[in-house]
Amino acid sequence: MDFINKASSQLRTLIIEALGTVTADGDVPAVPVPDFNIEIPADKSHGDFASNIAMVCAKAFRMPPRKIAELICDKISLSGSLFERCEVAGAGFMNFFLSRKWFSDVVSNVLEEKDDYGKTDFGKGKKILVEFVSANPTGPMHIGNARGGAIGDCLTSVLQWAGYHAEREFYVNDAGNQIEKFGKSLSLRYMQLCSEKGQQAVYECHSNTEKLCTDIYSRSGEGQDFEMPEDVYLGTDIIEHAANYYKQHLFELENVSETERRKALVDYALPLNIAGLERDLKKYRIVYDNWFRESRLHESGETMKIVDKLRETGHTYEQEGATWFRATDFGVDKDFVLVRANGIPTYVVPDIAYHYDKLVTRNFDKAVNVLGADHHGYVPRLKSALTALGVDADKLDVVLMQMVRLVRNGEVVKLSKRSGKAITLVTLLDEIPIDAARFYFNLREANSQFEFDLDLAVEKSSQNPVYYVQYAHARICSLIANLESEGITVPESANLDVLDNPREIELIRHIASLPKEINLSAKSYDPAKITKYAIDLATLFHRFYDACSVKNAETTELMNARILLCVAVRQVLRNVLSILNIESPEKM
Image 1 (cartoon, rainbow, N blue to C red):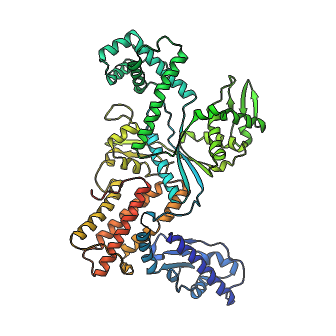
Image 2 (image 1 turned 60 degrees about the vertical axis):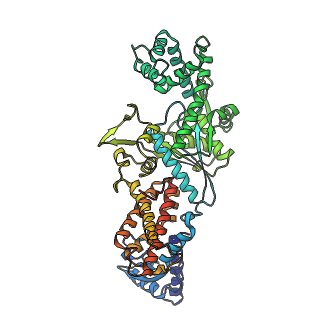
Image 3 (image 1 turned 45 degrees about the vertical axis):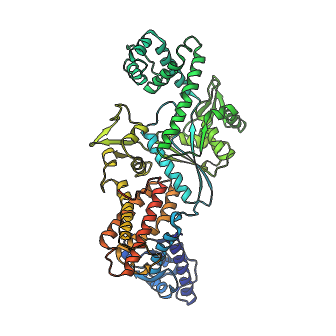
């Protein structure tokens, strides 16, 4: 249950009913009531809720706001409601204070709903497809993929908690220029191994693949033993694939055509890379519902069907043998090529076909993409093509993600301490806990840049935010265990109305806001709201625990109520951490 929304809705009804009474009594004219706000004041001494109703009615009623507020306050009936009193402040602000029963009901509801507390029906079951990471399967995943993975995975979880039918999807770019480049790179490295110098390297390394890769990599470059052109992938992973294929098949591909050699090497290496992506992402606790291959669009003919559809609707033209899309008709700064003069479609065509498949063929209500900030100009072009195809482009939402700077000892890090190479997702997870990575990458909004402190991520102190939150959960578990060791068990029920200490009230109020925060997070596609909520909850619990003794409470009645409050906080912490797919340790 969303207690914040329930109270807000009830308050709006109470105010409107009071205005009706004031109007019926002839105290104000019978005119339409302007829209008014129900808000939660930052300063809780001004009430739990506030309204500007008197301010917005001043002009319509031709009356001072404070006078209107006093009339409403005098007529409003709070009996049997969630509120216990109303106050008028300043020039006409109206402040409302919740009853003690509301706070008790919040705690009871958490204890009753348990693992489901926080879930809402905000999304009404609408289908959303969240696509994220979608790294090229031609090499290892980088730090940008690490952030995109954490954001996309947690965002999907938030959407599910907010009542959407949300699915995770990885778009496998197993066709196009990057695969051509991949095949060329593999072929060059394989042929190097078949050469005289390559054979010498194989002999000297005694079939040690890692040593062989390092040797060839160190001797590559212009003027070196193994020269490589600029338009290829230069990573050691390419050498490793070529070396492993050579170890299994020796000179089998040396004398075949270049086309046949590249195909054989790609058919060998690409499935290994895709399996590696899936394996590494599972290690990161990301499991996709769908792995959609770009090659499927080409094989089914859907790619060129999109071009035909755009031609039929008159949104293309021919120029110098190429087919262009009239993007400027849809507000984009310039037109762009769909099919080159050689008949090969550009990379954007399968992307258009892919999104048409999402929104039309598979009929998702929304498609959400988590992309790097460098895709800023790409999004309007994609949306313009969808519009031309008769698809509502507003069904496509894009979360643009800024890069992260890794910092160690106060300095920016670009290399892995373990391998001496660029830090990838895998090498990052070798250095820091998975919980820390998932939490840290969701600490800020996706469109904000921030520094990931590698030292702090492994620090066991309150300065480390994920440790701080997990410690709050473990602290409650230890409290309950210690009480039970002394014969004090968790009561089945208690008089929760005795929880009236300001620290208790503050903590319960925050517990009540979880459904609202989940809805806001889903609406803004911002899982960082959930990490912030978790940190704030841990902070409020630690403050409560330090100020309000549980075991040594003034009365047994108060002790039992505080025990149940602690159990409720533990449950909410578990739920929040489960949204982030982060562990809830019982001991630390």
